[in-house]
Image 1 (spheres, rainbow, N blue to C red):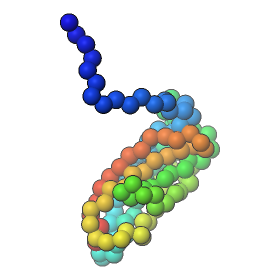
Image 2 (spheres, rainbow, N blue to C red):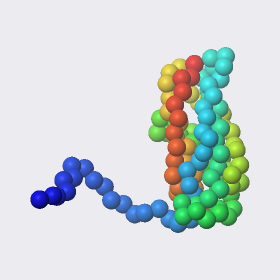
Image 3 (cartoon, one colour):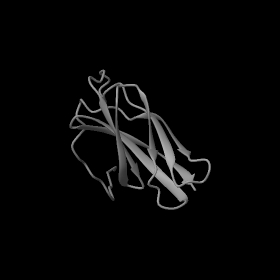
Image 4 (cartoon, one colour):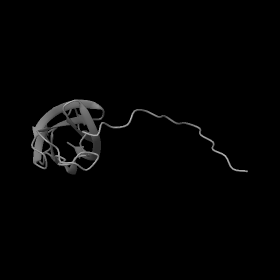
Length: 116
């Protein structure tokens, strides 16, 4: 006889249908002379999570190791860059980039790089 065993599970509210898909083409480029900074490049989503075109601008939120470091506004599908010049010391860091349209928060992507 079969059954379901769950050791850890969390069920929450679904995404708003107006929420944007995840940003794409995320790249992290450390400053090449060793300064404690990196340039983040990302393509803003152009479609919502239910595959309808985004109307209006997309807000791109950038966090490093869980702490928000910047926000950029972009047209749907536009490639934007942001320079994180607040990296405290040399080391490995992970940037998480998420998108939202108004109050509708979307999906996120992440990438890591060594800075310093």
